[in-house]
Image (cartoon, rainbow, N blue to C red):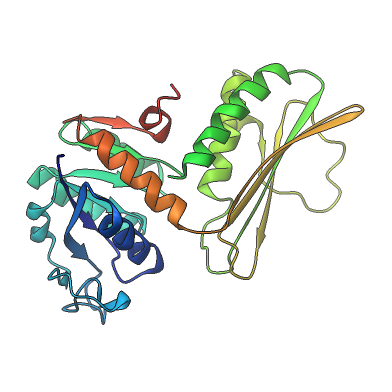
Length: 267
């Protein structure tokens, strides 16, 4: 069995620690690099100290350490991820990007980098969520007349972007099935006297509070019936496990830009 050498960005954060545990527990992956931001109190600590063990991998802010990895898994912030992207290109390290909130320029940088290294990027790494994307594509193809689409999402109070990247991806799946551009038919918010709902649009509602990991519901509302497709995340391990599936997928590719639909064979 081939062992995949994994680097984790944001190693002292909640998602980073979840990824580290997943890598340790998988028989075909090995933790070789643990990154954190410059100035973090975790720099110099053993990457697995939080679970009371010693891995021998010390948390560092030196991107040159990436030379010891086959693939970097990154769920940080856009500015950090793009800095890691540059280092990965220089060192020939593949990337799995779970970071959200990129602007158009950031997305273009990722696309350009995929000509040199293989990259999987997704708004959501969960296997279940990516199955929902496929279900929405099918549903929207059938419910393309006489049904209004609304997307409701809720996350913890610390999330900084809205709507969530997953909610946007759900909207894009519906819009694509309707042969439309999401930006042209999305209603991002409502306030005051808005008038009647416009046909063919996709509405978004954002909720923030508590420690909710991620709830998403898509409602197709027609005359006399309503169809709802819901995904609720109760544990961040779903993102870690999806990331490991992406790492195994990348082991078979040297360059190219892929998403989780391709990783899971849904395209």
